[in-house]
Length: 314
Image (cartoon, rainbow, N blue to C red; front, top):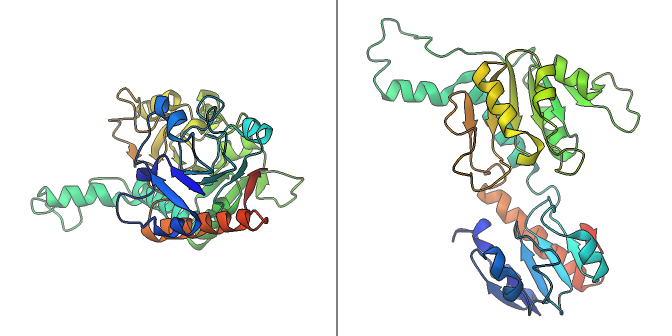
């Protein structure tokens, strides 16, 4: 069994061992594969284990022996599912491996917006406290989470984890209604946008969620709302978010994901003072990636035993 990893560097940079994959066959590790080299790089693969490498009709056209694609990810929008179905390639993702980590990072962003720890840390190290007239200089505005309404768009495992933490902070929560929910905290999207103090997205990227948070959606939000995105960059219109931040319609944004990654040189969010940016690392704690490797190996083992797990295409 020849197993090819076309983008290993996106999962480990030497800290996470790839040794567990050798249980299943010969492992060929490529750190990062340029798009125009993917087809040749995977042509002999029986299995491809990847994170964000685009696998489609063009890049898989030479892979005549391919039987399985395993993802170091929950999202699979980089995989051409119709092509895989037509060619009998099983695709399995790693669902729910990052729930706790993404929830944690979501609140790290929310808390930075409300408590400004990073800003105050810089202020102190730059001598601001030494030169302060008072023992407690209020140089950056602060806010309490208690009593605030958190609007959660996407109510899967991560959305539910985020709600549990929000309730521990004595926040109120709203979620987008689905499947006939009658709980009063489930509302339509417009109501959520209008009534939430903080809005966080945890939905997958698909045709219905592409640019869900656009100029029209932002216009429906409260003045001074906070927007958090740890889902996928494409869920938001970056230009609309940037403009809302500059105009003060949004008080802050905490963003971990962008439509183009790594960040494009001309990204409109870069350099905006009230926009906190992290480089798609919500999923990346060491414990989380160790759990991810375990799930990926369990998925392969299940496939080889005729009982595939976490199947998104078969």
